[in-house]
Length: 389
Picture 1 (cartoon, rainbow, N blue to C red):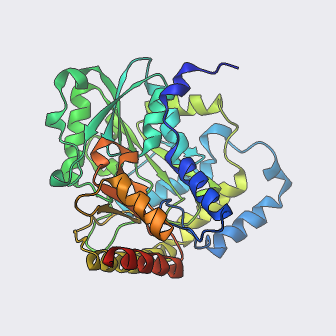
Picture 2 (spheres, rainbow, N blue to C red; picture 1 turned 180 degrees about the vertical axis):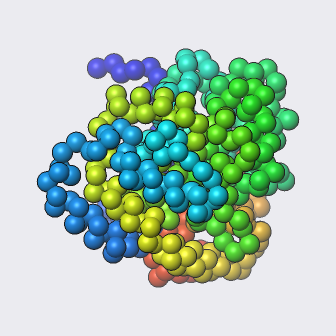
Picture 3 (tube, rainbow, N blue to C red; picture 1 turned 45 degrees about the vertical axis):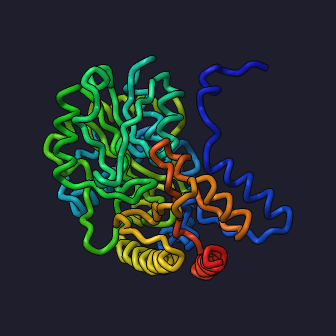
């Protein structure tokens, strides 16, 4: 049966392809260590799990979710409190916050809510591949904006051709950045607001790594910039800070018109978020800040181990201070794919080739630190042994 043409424009999803490769190797008896996917292995805190269990036993929570597409008002109020405490940002929980089944859903619904067929949507290169897929599925036209090491992996707005900017209706930004780990500055965010205002571009600032930053790096929200709510929204998620990736709980915050539009998309797409997951999310935001600190300390130690090993094999660089990824330059004389293939074939260690994130990802690979300590240590030992030969 013939399917929609737009699906042919979408490349295979990176992580699904990696999983297939890993599963095949495992089936062949190979001890594969994957450092390619950002999925925390440590357990969700007990208080969050306990809240899910307790509220799941209430028959009222077995019905359609309260407030359906918007998310429980209690959850939205807690998000508002968290933003006020964490960032000094004031949000109206009734009109400026929307509960999401993870921030990835928000990216897709944002496109449907804002973009018309053939509208240009700006996205960074390298960038999270799901943005491109959402743009294409929504009928938009992706336009790659390079982010380069010499610019701190931040886009240079002046380099975007004015005729492109004038035709653009939306832009995806993501800092702390996947895959590079780069973090935004308030100076940059203020420039972003002015750029968006000048060209009437709606900003979708995807911020699920907001809490995963290391010593010396400020926690920053797009909504801290003056006028941010006039031009866009911020997406966030409980997945990364509270190890709740599989729970699928996030939020969109900001411009009330965009929030209302995304809400309209949601009410015609799904029936909302399971109430007990939202109650658990409230518990996470209220009680588990120390857990986040514990995870940052853990990722920091893993980060140092990886950097120390890479230095031993001649790869030395100054990594940005965000996310639980390392954006690693490949050895001289090798392409990203050549390096990833050698790692896989010789050491059974899987990393993500930089080119999976765009043409400007050439020369890099992304390493995830979300694996048990013992497995990371084993992976580093294999890499050191292979490249010291």
